[in-house]
Structures are given as structure tokens and as C-alpha cells.
Image 1 (cartoon, rainbow, N blue to C red):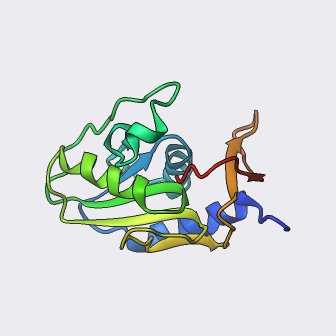
Image 2 (tube, helix red, strand yellow; image 1 turned 90 degrees about the horizontal axis):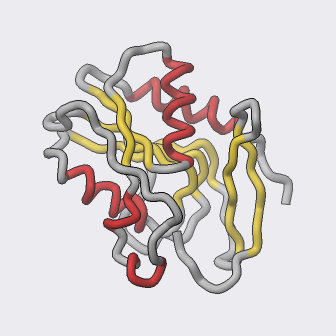
Length: 170
């Protein structure tokens, strides 16, 4: 499979995010890939938008199966989310469970006016009635495959396709 350039997908997603920004908007990235994407989008927009980060690992419904990640990141939302139009950013959308967990955590900080989900790639396979509204690309994968997003030493995004061992849904 020929993988797309994640930098091109980021440019596409940045344009889509820019189009939905309204007064009282804020951006929140989900650790870790969503935070990388959020940082790059904010730099491209050249606007001073309230922004923060979430690590939804402890809010996942499959926490007991997945266990703890090596390094949990504390939530950092330095603004009042009440009545904000939140643009929630993640890297790869799969089952919807990370998004559900992030929304649960977000509501611990208050009740936003709205939440728009923006993802670099929707890989198909949603198990919950949750779908991203803003997408860099839709690329369907088999259940035994997954994308691995990383950053090189210059901070550029790279994308790889991996074969999974077992059935660890993300």
C-alpha cells in the first residue's frame, strides 16, 4: 500500500480546522499524536487560540485490558471549557473508544458548547456511534493492520503501516 505523506494530510486538515474556527473556539489535542498535530495546526493558523491537551488512557472502557501506558500525561487545559466550541484533535481514528474517553475527560473540566472531532486519518472500524467531522484522509485498513505516526528529528510527521499482534483496538 502506498501511504500518503502525512505532511500533506496535515495541510488538508489545517485548512478544514481553519474553516470551522469561530468566536469562542478552542483546540485540544489527545496525547500523543493529536498533540503533535494540534501544535502544528496552531503554528500554521497564526492565531492565539486557547488550547490544551488530554491523555484519555485512564478514561478508556478497555483500561483493564490495555493497562497503563509507559508515561501518562496529565491533562493540561488552562482555560474554562464552559460554552467553548472545542476542536478535539487526534491522529488516527479507529474504534471511537479513545474519542469517547477524551470526551468523558473533557466534561470533567466543564460543558463545552460543541465538540468537533478532527483527525489526520480515519482508518475505518468504528465500534461506537462516533465519527470525525474533519478528516485529512480516509484509508481503510484490515483489523490486523495499524498506522504508526511518529515525528522525525526535524519535527516532520512520518507514517508507517504495521501488522498488529493480537486484537488491541485503539
